Length: 229
Image (cartoon, rainbow, N blue to C red; front, side, top):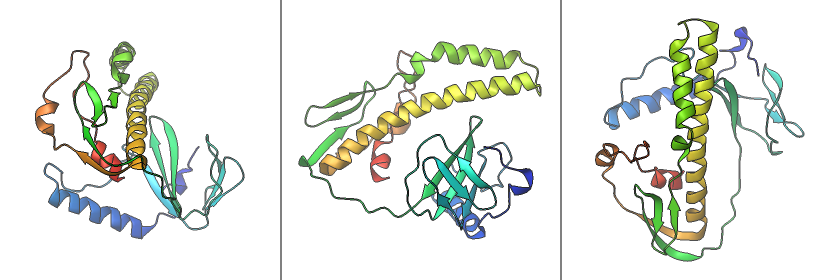
């Protein structure tokens, strides 16, 4: 999807920009280590917000204000859309949209379950169920090293270097997507099948310093935050 240069900052809802600014200041004041809010820079977490006459058409097409009809990779649900956020990551454009959804209650297998988040296993449940940590990084470590070497050999500012950086970014995103998908599946199962989930309080700062033998950082997945989301 190509965004015309004159369109990049048009139709951006000012109210949303102010809400983003408010959230940034709250994070700065309440979360240790968060820096002072700064202006967005082109090429870094590129994204913009749209609302208004947005309509999902049949199949994988969506009509956006001022931009027109855009084709998506996935089939879209036929629902009224409130607003959309369009973002760029690893050279590709992504669209996320907000709409009203009525969730149906699910039948719970049991009232309560305990979850132990560790290093060797992603999660070990009190009923004996164990979810192994994915080795997305280890399986692609050689390719990542090769792509990083290609980037370092390209001349700074050249088109070939830009291409090499995009190729490396796509591989990094694939690793992140595999991890996120695994986490989503585990937390979805936990949330749908249990009324109460008890998770241990971890010493995250201590675990970050410890590395596993396969080269992956032994940082526990944010299971508690994912369940809340």
